[in-house]
Length: 141
Image 1 (cartoon, rainbow, N blue to C red):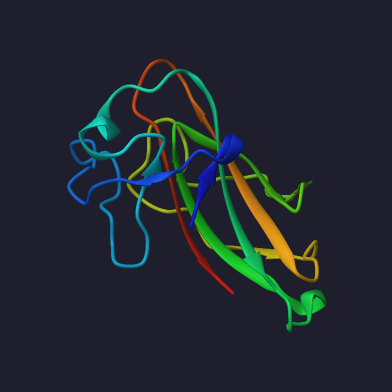
Image 2: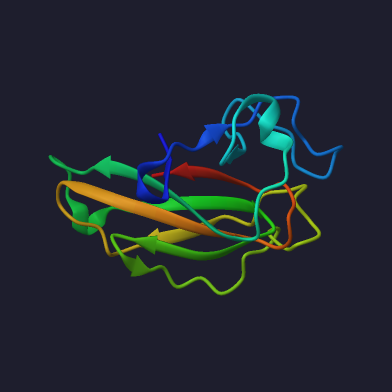
């Protein structure tokens, strides 16, 4: 489950929402999420940063050997990733430019920075102009 800044919900976009083919279609393993739900999902969102966070528990696991493989996409762009409040070093958000939302980025690994117990993984998406915005990821690990 995903939340936005200050605990506001992040809504799964309806399957038919692909912005006239400019967004990669939702699948069984990954769907677009955004700040609005239902028909409002295609409404224009204000310019600025949108924060999407998920939490997971590593109690009973060796957090020192934990890793996540991720692929991402964002409209307009994913500009930051953090794990437990620390920036994840990743310089190229391939597939997440302002003009291409038709594919997920190449897979990349998040290694290190995990904690015993609850962990928080956050992505920041920047929306330029008053346009629709959304975020999508495929995580494994």
